Image (tube, rainbow, N blue to C red):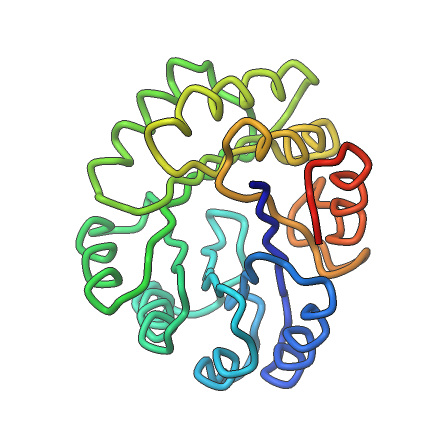
Length: 228
């Protein structure tokens, strides 16, 4: 079954609250809260109480394309706080120091973990991605997210082959960034990707090539693979 995650990039608690309420109308399977976009204090327990939809907490570092401005310790602590606030998933970058310990702690708190790699320059050879995935698995995460950049349409085929080969053994999220990678965002769930991401609406994209939830649902409806 195709699962869609709506991404919320609010910069304030009030904006976050309003966007969570607004996205209910689109009925996403997941909501990703981009904590790195926030510029003030946040009450994650309040956000949890607003919806029964599965929540993903992401606090992306600048080196992984995010906007977090604080210290690394504070960034990780906010992810722990999300887990303590009953968020269903916490997304952590593979390059984070002591990543295995962090994943273990998040899982002890009660949340599931998404372990992420972002390659903003290219889509590596399939054998290299498979090798890196095996290293990621050593951490014991629940879901593995491998995102690359499409420099050609052929890169979509490469990432879809990766998804098809790996999703049978592990929960995988994988697609290509950029306008050339849009097709992989649409097709990866058909080959086993755990979910695909969509913006709340046009103009609120958090990554190049990201489609709005309205557009992506309409596309799936057209090819008869998604039901409301």
